[in-house]
Length: 275
Image (cartoon, rainbow, N blue to C red):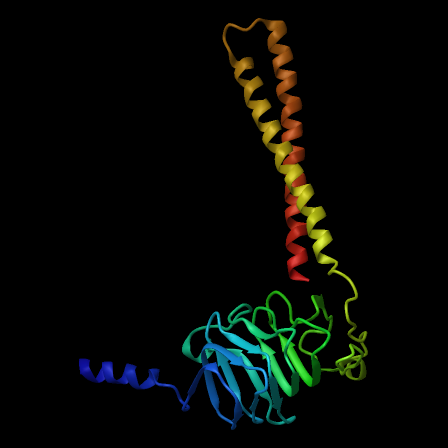
């Protein structure tokens, strides 16, 4: 009975579908299948890598795709190309942002074409380093990515989480763009962020307030303890005791103010990571 139990555990631990492992320098066309990326995929200049509609590409931690040639993935509305984490709720592990690196497009990359595709649970989603790479995105959904979802030439391209977006960037740097949510939900269209993200200066300002609050708290606490010890000294005279008490009470007020400022600043800093 004990051995039967062991065999049962081994059997249910086996993957339900055959899996092809990928790593290293790759090119050519890969049919609709389940793939696991165990090491970085490199697409070299002059080569092309494509995945057929219905392909699921799962990435182990600290892996991703580095494109210097062409990456072509054209799914369909009913059979998307999925880039996701190896974590699977069915196996008891929950996928989360930062599970894998993402798709990195260096300045010398030739072309990216993603159609009816989904990129999720990565660190930086699709990171395009240069304006000189031709990019075509059609009905591409980005969701649950960590640091950023879509960046181009160091700028965050804003869009709505989980809503399919269409972008076409030509080599000269111009682009056309639509956001399907504008037609379906009426919210504002996504736009390319022309400057640094608003979160960075806000975090710097809030971080400054947090540091100030902590400094005030430490100074107030140290001063309050010092005067409290003097106030409790049995040899102190009455007039000095009154002065020590007043100084202690004032220091306690500063300590409380510093604690309040620190708590508010910490909450504000946390909000910038949520939105």
